[in-house]
Image 1 (cartoon, one colour):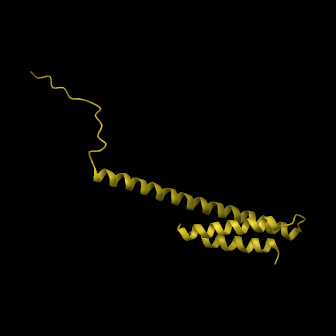
Image 2: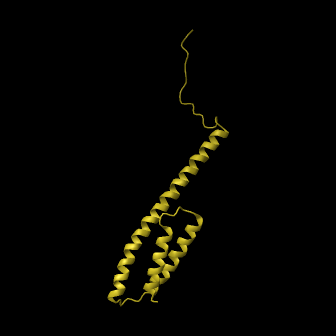
Image 3: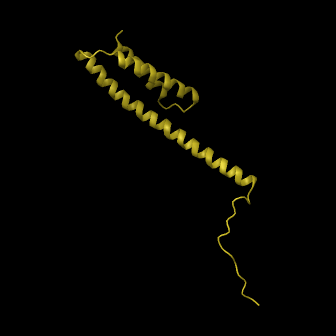
Length: 113
């Protein structure tokens, strides 16, 4: 099996693994492993490519775009979760000490004598 074939099988397996999968710590570790393996395989590819290898690389590039879209989806999911945690933390601290962040931005003057 050539490096391009290995890269193709690795890319296909990772794409099928991350599509429509909710984010988790295990998934993030698997993505890191995938990127490391893929980087090694890309480094090992020799440049005089045959026509068949060029077709496989074009297919890999289309699959790569799908992987990037899935990674963006995961990134947005993680960002939304972080925002939710931040809001939850602020609400919790506000609940524990509701008078902590009072601002005195105005004063009422009673004009009656």
